[in-house]
Length: 140
Image 1 (cartoon, helix red, strand yellow):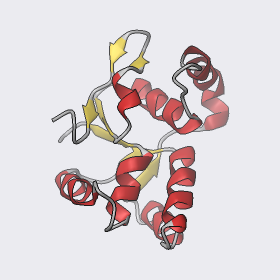
Image 2: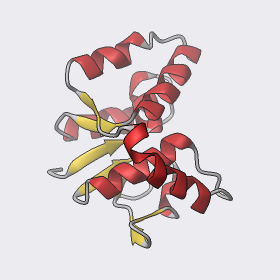
Image 3: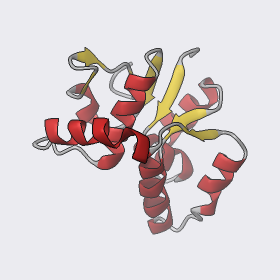
């Protein structure tokens, strides 16, 4: 994969949690992509919470950021209007803040793929009506 890879919460948690049903898929997929993977703070917040709930150490995620394996690619303050518009557009989905940030990242990085386990991304659109290129177990 030569495009920018944008990382959603699900694959990150699946990769960290060996007991997750998608762990093997996530581990294989992570081996196939070159770092850094681009993500956002809401994704990391969700992942830290979910990983800690499974007994993991959330500091492992921050170490991945510090090591350059994960890159924060979005400033919420700067992108708040665009993110708010996405949350309004998909209020009935419902769309989480993390999902809106991932969609916005896909708008900012036109040559990208979104790594996700969330099937909502099949209905989300970027730049109005453009399909978001996905990497997921059910899109391959």
